Image (cartoon, rainbow, N blue to C red; front, side):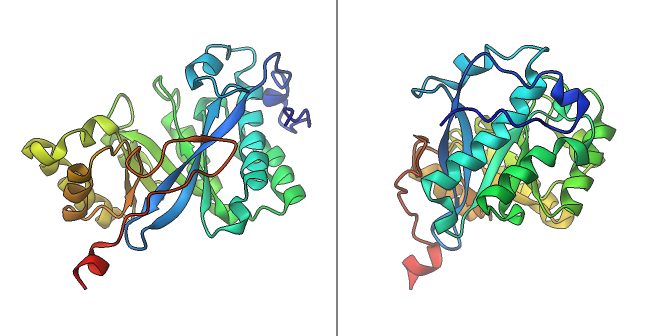
Length: 261
């Protein structure tokens, strides 16, 4: 599927909307432990033949980053629909660069146009804030979260507990979800400090009305430790690896209540 060349309405985004490379999307499920099925599928950028995300992101420059961010949204929606996501109750989670959004309501227009053309309900879209560098203006990010919520989108803060995605950002704005960084998850079943930290984050988020997603789960002991700590949403190789341009077969996790019945 070729990258759409539809013109965004935002002048800032328009300056970089021509890309000289192509890319595609892979999908990985986020599992709801209350049901054992997918709550959402995260769209992950890949090369056109499944090359790594790093190989694609290495081609992103300050000159094309805005256009790339726009086209990632378009590609995610188009590819998810073609893969059959709309035939499931799951939502679609799209990563984006908050520093690549000038005006939230202007920069979202291409996304809205794409969703409308496909018949993709916008209330089934989640936007994950992902940025490897410090967010230039946290107040601007807070405005993005507020605007997206008003438009009916879900929002998630990715890699919570790593780099710049920490308590300072959560104090400034509250997304609908946070995704615990995988370094906190790795081996938590054998790590009391990790379990205590995650337990505290879960309780804090309950008070804030923020859902917690644990990502990077690879083992059953990690999963069982997260269940015990009250984490409802999980993601990782234990359930499914990302699949290029299709929804992967999910290793369903039987809810704890069902197993004890």
